[in-house]
Length: 116
Image (cartoon, rainbow, N blue to C red):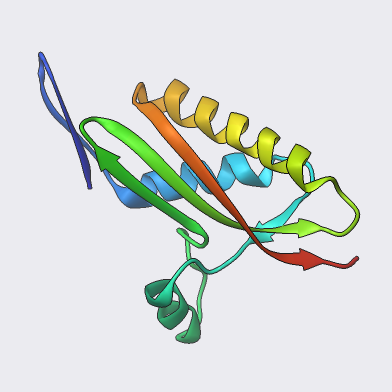
């Protein structure tokens, strides 16, 4: 849960919401084939089966600002630098416009390449 205080009180936004928001924004970017498991806890949960709504997404809050970590799979033949720049811009815009919170960093890790 990410909590932000303002003049009206405290607002809490669940990590599940952020994961869905970021995953949706990432899926709209050209060249992103999918999200990859991003750590041991997601890896263990993926073994049990079922869909992981936070697959490949980790959101951290510091002083009312967010840092987003993404683990992605890209399509073969695309310019990775262009895909990453587009992804960073899209995720930052989506999070800031929906939540009003400032995104300090979007860190993208290309973990795999998909051959079509």
